[in-house]
Image (tube, rainbow, N blue to C red):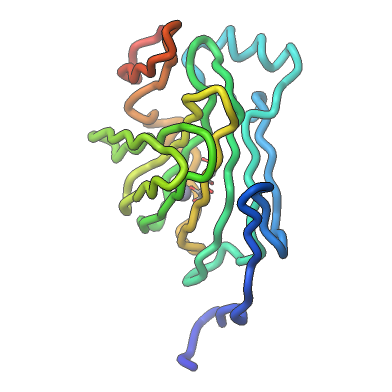
Length: 194
Ligand code: S6P
Ligand code: ZN
């Protein structure tokens, strides 16, 4: 075996339950409520009302036990609940990987989108079960539920790349994602409030 600064973990199998969308053995679970998404929705009053109402869970992330350390490839399943705040579709916080490395997403259930922003260019990938969305190095990424059912996807990402959430707060994501009354999806320029 080659020398590593941090030795890799031992090979092992993970059972993926495609119905329950769980891993066995399980790793850490993260729950993000509306109050965790401060400063992200354009309509701040609508966001404050949602927090005051019942502060709903917007998304959860379940992981395998593969650690977030250099050279390892952790996996997680994110489930974003359906909903809109001020017309803006429920979404993840979004982040940039400070050590610029690529990442892949695989759509598992529901419908959503993968919004990517490199500070200048914006890309949108429609996601549904079976879609692989590729995030190249240096592109901040956010996931959005555009449907009426929970939207779930598998992420496989470089464990040592880190997660920078302040980059998105400072730079935005280039577009905001709204669902119109007729059900169609509209990507609006980030600087334009609704
Ligand atoms: C990790 C990967 C996903 C997200 C998850 C939640 O690199 O991109 O597992 O962490 O979808 O999104 P966020 O923006 O709150 O981390
Ligand atoms: Zn990521």
